[in-house]
Length: 112
Image (tube, rainbow, N blue to C red):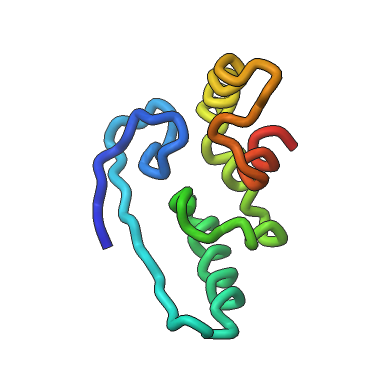
């Protein structure tokens, strides 16, 4: 577990609420042994609880399998105006290419 002061980055998990300058963030990592068959079921249950509390995943961790749990809507709602600002900057950088900073998951999140 680690604690981080609120960030001003548009899509940082430590960016809690737009305009809130007092929030700090706790990063909590849940690990499992390689080959644990039921880890996704466990992670889905944890994700539901944490999303209900306003939690968001670390971008570089596994979370895209939480589609049925509403992760994409949750992230769009959480980042709100910041996600729109990020997408506008990304569009300006990419022009018609739309391939800088994008993979299938981020394309789904930002453009679907």
